[in-house]
Amino acid sequence: MSCKVKLIAIAMCMFPLFAYAEDIQYVDLQSRFTKLYVDYLVHDDYTVERTSEIEIKALTEAAARELKDYTLSHSTSIEELEVLEAYTIKADGTRFDVPKNNYQITVNKGNGDNQAIFSDRTRVTIVFPELEINDSIHLKSKNVETEPMFPNYFAEAGYFWSQTAYDDVKISFDLPEQLVFKHAVRDMNENITTVNGRSHIELTYASMKPVKTKREDYSVWSKEDEAGFAISTFPDYESVAAAYGTRALPKAVPTDRVRALAQEIVGDESDKKEQARLLYDWVATNISYGGNCIGVGAVVPHDTDFILDNRMGDCKDHATLIDALYASVGIESVQALINSGTSYWLPEIPMASVVNHVINYIPEWDKFVDSTDSSLPFDRLAFSLSDKPVILVEGYKPGMRTPATQVGDNRQELDSTMEIQSDGSVSGEAHVKTKGHPAISLRAVWRDATQDQEDKFIKSMFSSRNHIGSGSMKKDDPTPLSSEFSFSMEFIKPEFIQEEGTGAFYILPLVPTTMPVYGFLGHSKEEIQGYDTACSNGYSIERLTYKFPENMNILATPNDLELNENHIYFKATYELDGHQLTVIREIDDRTPGNVCSAETMNKQRLTLTKIAKNMESPVVYQH
Image (tube, rainbow, N blue to C red; front, side, top):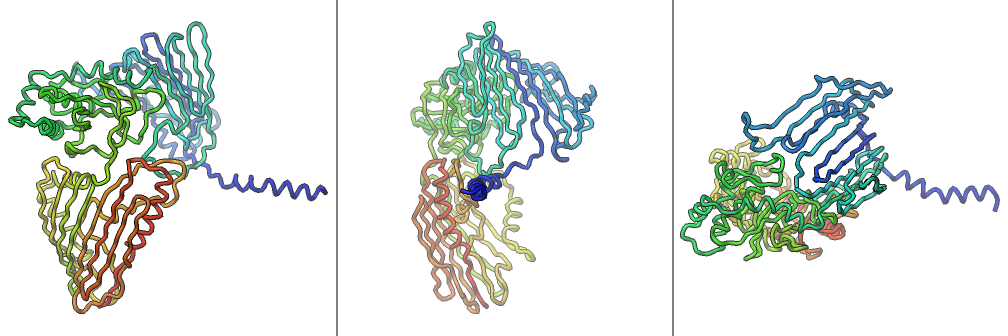
C-alpha cells in the first residue's frame, strides 16, 4: 500500500470520530464554578462544622448582575454562621475585598424575647464590589451546628447539576473513626484514609465542558440521577422513621381539648369511616397551612394547643392533629413520611432529607390521607403523592407505596347543543359531569369565587373580539370536599363564525372544563431517550350537537376515527344529517401507574399524533 493510500485510509477511519465530535453540543454557560470546596468536621455528639469555599466566574453581563449579591442563610437557634472571606477577583487577578458595610442581614425573629412562629432563618446578603463580566466572586464561610437536627445521627448528600460547569470540586469529611456509616459516590473520585483515630474521606470532581441535554421533562427525577455523594449513619429507613417519631409522636397524644373537639365534630355519627372523614374534613378546612422552619422545628411538630389556637400548621402539624383526633375516637392512624416532589424511589443510602412531607395512614382501610390540601376530599391523594414510597413512622413496612392513580378514577362527560345563527353567533347549553381530580379542581375554582367573579368570567368566556357575550351557570354546591361535581351553562357567543362566505371552525366545547378530550393530546415534540416521566390516566367523552341555519352548507367534516393501542382508546364519529352535525369524541387513557418509561411515552406519542390530526380537521362551511 502506498503512503498516499494509507493517508486516505486513515482519514476515512477518523472521519466518523470528527463527525461525532461536531454533533456534541456544549452548554452555553452564563457562569462557572472555578472552585467549590466543602469540608465537614463531624464531632462525637454528631454536631457538624461545615466550611465552604466557592469561586464563581461571571461569563456574561447577566451573570455578573446576578452574582453581585450572594445570600447565605442559617437557622439562628441551632446554627452559627461566620463569613471568613469575601472578595471580588478581577479578570487580571486583582482582588477587591468586600467592605464591612456591604452586608445586609435579615433576621426572622419573634416579638421581643419570644420565639418566631414560622422561621428563625437569618439571611446574610453580601454585595461584591467592582464585579463585571469575566470577574469572579470568592466566598469562604463557616457554619457551626450547635444542635443536630436528629440526635445521634449524621447524614449529608450533594449533587452536581450536569448543565453546570465545575472546574475544581473537593468535598471532604472528617469523622470519628468509630462512627458507623454508609456512603455512596457517583462519578466522583474518592480517597479514604484513617489518621489519629479519625476517618477522612476526600471526594473530587470536575466537569469543565458540560454537554447540553435534550431532556425537557423532569417530572420524574432525583438527585441520584446526577454526579454526587451521600453519607449517612442511619442504618436503614426504619431508623429514619424512629428518629422522626421519637420527638414527633409524643405531640400526637390526645389532650382533653383534642378529645372534646373530636366528640364535637363526630357528634352522633357511629360509623368509624364516616367519623374519620368528618375529622379529616374539619382539619383540612379549618387548619390553614403555615410553615415551621425554626431550628429543629423543621422536623418536630408544634403542640396541638398551638395548632388549634392559631388554626394553622405545616404538614407535621396536620398529621399530628389528625393522629390525635383519630386516637380520641378509637381510630388507629400512623404518620407516614413521603417525598412530594419528583422522586419516586428511595435512595440506597438512608437519608431523612429524601422525604419532605408527612401524611397519615389508616391501617383499618389501608388508606392514606393528606389534610394539608384544603381542596382534597377524604377519598383522594394529590397526584404528587401517588405511587410514591412511604416510610411509616410506626410499624415500618419496607417497600410500601401509596396507591397509583387507578383507571377510572378521573372522568369527565360533556353534552352540549349549539345552534348557529345566520349572523354567525351561536347560542347553546352544556352539561358537565366530573369525577376525581377534574371535580376536585373545579370545586377549588368555584369554592371561593364571588358571584361578581363568576359573572365576569362567564362574560369574558363567551365574548368575542368585538361584541359582549352572555351566559348563566348552575352548579353543585362547591363547598363540600367531594370528588364529584356537575354544572351546566347556557350561553350566547357572538361572532362564532363568519357572517357570510366560506370559512371553517374547529370542533371544541365552548364551555371551560378541566379534562377536555383535547387536553389529553399534549406530548413531547421529540422522542424521549433514557428517562422516565410522570404519567396518568383518565376518561373523557364529549357529545356535541351543532345546528346550522338553512342558508348554510357544510362542505366538509372530519373523518371518523377509532384507535385502540398503547393503553389509549379513542373514538370519534361525525354524523351530518341535513343541517345538524352530531359529534361524539371519546378518549380512555388506561395507562397504568404514575411513572412511564421512555418506550411507553414514545409509543403513546405516535398514537396521540394520530388523534391530534383528526381533531385538527375543521368543519368547512359556506353561507
